[in-house]
Length: 168
Image 1 (cartoon, rainbow, N blue to C red):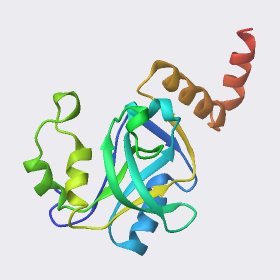
Image 2 (tube, rainbow, N blue to C red):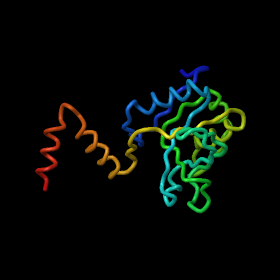
Image 3 (cartoon, rainbow, N blue to C red):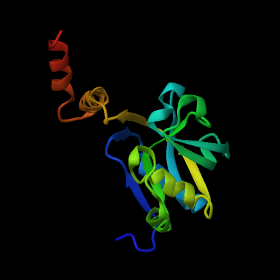
């Protein structure tokens, strides 16, 4: 389906509420830089083992040139606290690299390993997006997302807020 076009990857366990939507933000960055883009945010150092972590050099206040990426490093081994959070715009060349990647962290083929190989031949940008990220891979993160978005939804916000108040 992708053929020879750049494409977006949105991992379902990360819900990001942003205006404009994060993918629109990243498409705008892609239009400027014409290279693969990783959506990133700072994460607590003790949580680096839950993310792909990049090493990078700042270009602007929210855009960085990526020079390395490591999948789920231990906090003491992490090159930074800049974690990839489930939003990517990738060039189709990634498929060549994924075909050649061997199982990595967790015994799985890791997108991070393909990205690391792609960086050897193409520029890679990390984009610090504007918006709120909810980790829906955890029960608590999912509940936080549903409450926050429910309270913003114009069809149910008032009734939902009243319901939440009634719970105490």
